[in-house]
Length: 298
Image (cartoon, rainbow, N blue to C red):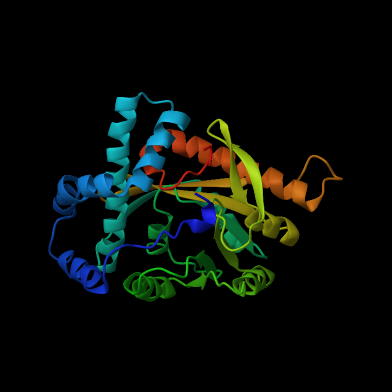
């Protein structure tokens, strides 16, 4: 399955989402986790074969687990993914989470210096939830997002993120989001882009990840190189029911070869990001949330 075919839309009707938000004003989060693990996860493992098989392949081929251990980790992965989706709705209902941040000084230094910078995220952990907890005080934060999300999710995202000086840039079929992204960097703002999914443009670069080559989108890395801006990658990993660990890593954007082309520099930057992903995924294998054949090995 190609990257562009993955939609990543939150399932359920508007009524279900709003009911869930209201329920979180009274229900204990651990109680909801337990119900989801017992009733919802087995259902999805039975009937969502595409996601199940791709995750099984991930644990068998990339993590090197035995068949039985891989099956168990598929279940744990589905449970963790469900918890992260529920955490989002819990925030909509007013619940709070604690964050332990590594290397925050790197982010703070770029926030206070002149000029814009980029943040690369990926579909590992729960990057979105950090946006509800932190305010972009010095520079506006622009986040590229999938435009086909459920209405309830988009409404609550707008409500909470706008309070923190965060603007969403939906991906458009006419590629108009590219102009907004470029303007944000030119205006000295922050631009946040997923670094692991190919949206719209078919341009890609092949990187080594977990021992095998995989396609990464060229666009985010070409944008960083063409604007010559600093780049951070941020991973937000769930640790306990109400606690997340935020991992901030700075990526080197300069090339050792002064004659390297822009594409070569962008490809090298993409590999550096893939290396950071590799490290985080090995530490948190149940928080890999790409439910398709990411390496496309068939």
